[in-house]
Image (cartoon, rainbow, N blue to C red; front, side):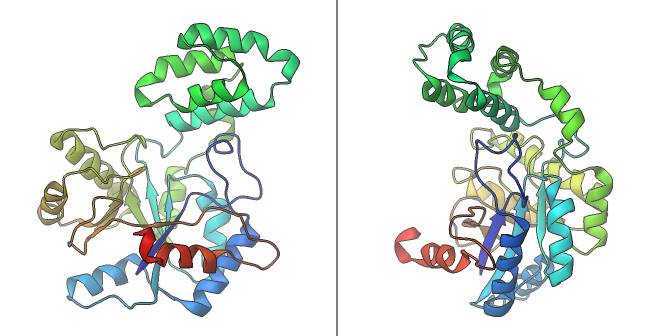
Length: 308
């Protein structure tokens, strides 16, 4: 089985994502769905779990569709297409971002990058000097400043907030106006439609450096939160970014201890079929156009032996 993951589908890339990665249009995603329906067997989360719990091998041509990060376009753009094509999917949602209570640090950094990229050259000098003072690092031009902003992590919240102010970006205003994440009622509607809602940490921060107790709380706590919201009895979890350095024995214990936790995606490579390490990042629109899909190329590259 190959697990595909997307982040959002949108006619245009929003400022809170544009500098981070590109996304497919609804038309390109519809082409993906048509290809998968004709060439692959699309499984639901529950079907995957049934196969594994029965000890049966998954069909070799099977795929599972997943969406990470809980962006609102999962409801406004993705949901109608999935319903139209009758395709199941899993939506991995950072529990503390549902309802647009706060902006994830990477999305705030993307807003700063979007503003930096739009500044005319003649107006760049002042912001660069202020960013140099803030970051205590020489920034000889726009690329250096962009690299410095990209290098900020979840522990650099105050520096990121000040960088946004220096660039004239107000993340709180953007969050209130744009509301980029799923609302609670939208999550409930997705679950009522038959889609699976999964845990994806609380705030979409890297989990690799956490101790075992903190890691367990992120996995179990965020999964419990989406279960309460969705009304599901069981749910999977996907690491934000990747959890390749997470202790495999801890993940195996969590799967045994918590009966509501079905699968873990993005963790270390193990022989445990419920720990699914690799997923195919299907966001890129390169090679799409009209009714053309780029999935044949992406799948071929993913299935090459040297890609493992």
